[in-house]
Length: 436
Image 1 (tube, rainbow, N blue to C red):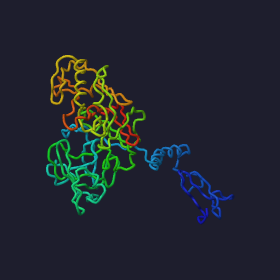
Image 2 (cartoon, one colour; image 1 turned 135 degrees about the vertical axis):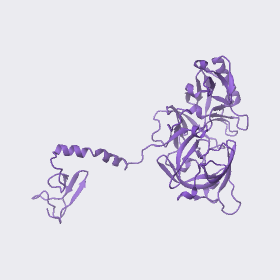
Image 3 (spheres, rainbow, N blue to C red; image 1 turned 90 degrees about the vertical axis):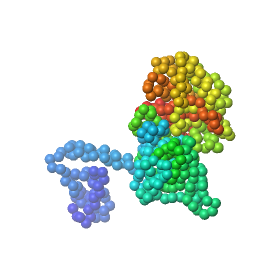
């Protein structure tokens, strides 16, 4: 073959060569003809392995197809599930759920609490007063950058404390579950599961007062501008879901799924309501509650959504047991007691506890939402004493304070359910999913 005019292109196991009529392996002088030949044909410069028949060579080459297909899949538009494991907060002695994240470059591992009713993320930083021993070190990250009062994100944080003039550090103070903390708004690389969000804005906590601030930080999943959904841009299309394992589980068996891919195909939904005065909260239209076959009677005004005074019902991942406004809870409690019978006692926040042998008499509880009814499994409506001899109704009255108009569907009632939030189509979905 004349090397001057020889052309050979390898295409997926086949050689493409130029040739002419007299010598099929030779090149055309003008290189106008391309012949497609098998990689181990007579014209190929590659020689087949000795003692191999053609059938054997086909089998050998076909065995490499899976790697090829895997490679091709990496060229497609992203269709993989963005997911991160969730565990109960038992290891941290809290009633919340935690997710593993990595902050900074290189990534520093933190176990952050998930909170659907908060926007900002915040973590304890090195040198923090009143923080735990596990902190984020800004000096160890090459991608860390502090933010000053001139950036737009600074105006979006609650409790802002910027000077009247100048461009000082974007500092803020917030309260959380009866405690308070001070922090500075900063940016750094944020990794959740396999996804990395560069320049993620979060609070670098420098002082804490009280014991209820999550020890390794909090990840806000609310609907505000500094939440995970907002800062991830179009990555997740305004959609996320979670399945919370039982508090009895020590393992990361739950999951946080981000984006529409991998979400349940068939799931019952209820409209998601928006309160302009409390825009971060996930309000739903809660219409009633049944104990057994009895639809508990009470004035509907106690469930009505009112954006002006904040009344209505929210779904929240940070509250432990479901709280109803007092008239609603009292009506539910009395109907439950009537159907169980016997004697009742109190343990802490639970005022309807009874001997466990009566558990078989406990009626199921069904939560009614617009277009959706959720019949709670028994393990989502009863909680047991540490000794195991008592079972208690795992609900309570809302605290008698300024927020006593709000009903909260809490995480104990959400265990082993897939809760889907679609902020674009304004709906919440609920499906049974065991994730213990």
